[in-house]
Image (cartoon, rainbow, N blue to C red; front, side):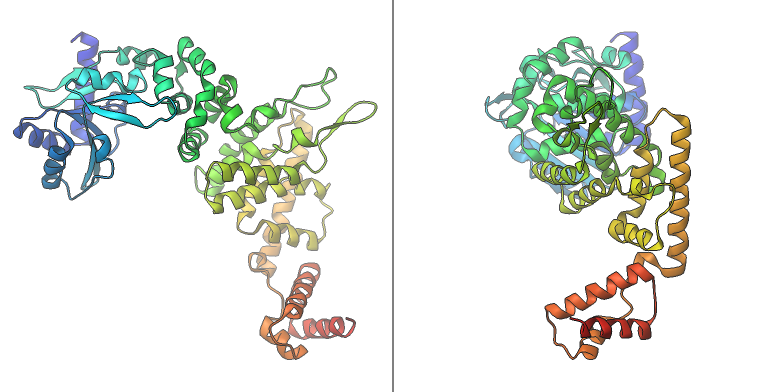
Length: 476
């Protein structure tokens, strides 16, 4: 082992002992049964970077049933849902482990599910992994721990470069999801992708279509929730992967006409995402809903673009079209309904503030703004502020001050009227008694009338609401 490898190995061992002391006890149990056990993949990379967590991946020459027996004795509980692919998992205390038998794999060209064959060499096992930085291992069952790096992963880790241990075309053809993982690691670690790897991604981007929507969603979510999502999103767009998995994003790269009558919508959307991230502390930290809304809020623009006679361009009702497109795309990616509904709502409302002018909204308009945003009013505050990307400092300051005044009015009305709990002054039972009705469509109409009254006039009390209701009913 070279001095560099030795230093890296020592760092990984020290990190492992400090952060995951249970790993050595597991290794001893495998060694006692005559098997090898090595920490492998991402945990080795993270141990070298000094950021090892409590989720550990191991590889072994023990077959899965033998691994299961050892883990049953070592772990508090185990699960073997991946045993068909050679993986058995367990948890002891706060440490979760996955132990996988050495593998060699053959892939069906039309599927990413491999035909698993168990191997007899850790080097062969490491060659099948996605990137060299994940193809390092720390053998724990020898006379002393041994750092194994057959593909120069340590060198690439130091250089912050993503390469594949085998030819990138072969690696990505076998498992196309690795192309999205490249974009994800670039975003998470702020790494560059080696030129030959990037070229291969462009050449076979079309193969991402064989990957399930759920797996694509997982990787995309990790990209957008990373410290620097711009990097990963740009890679997806530049390689053509986004054309297949998220086509609305590259379509934002509208041709800018010679007079620059509109800004680059793609660049604007990425900037809004970055600015929203800066305000996430208002939402308690990293927030998937606001990041999706920030990235996707303008995806209705390409379909609504119209050139104005004499110069200029318009995007009338792009928020309505965008909300529909957001729902369709997030459904296709199998996001949960709550997330879809929230992002759709924020997309539909993201222009509402611009009807506020210089602050002329009535109290009724403010109430409706809060009522329509519901539980996502703070998300809407964040999105609206992030949506200001003008380079005109005076205009930006004016918009910020106007929104400050709107938030102040909302806070005041919240305090005075409990806007977050807007309800009519009468409930359904009172309406049925006053109008001598049974549960029916007419009761619903009456409640709608009372809600409109509440939004227009604020809380007026039961007596005034009763008089207004009776007058309305008599005029029907």
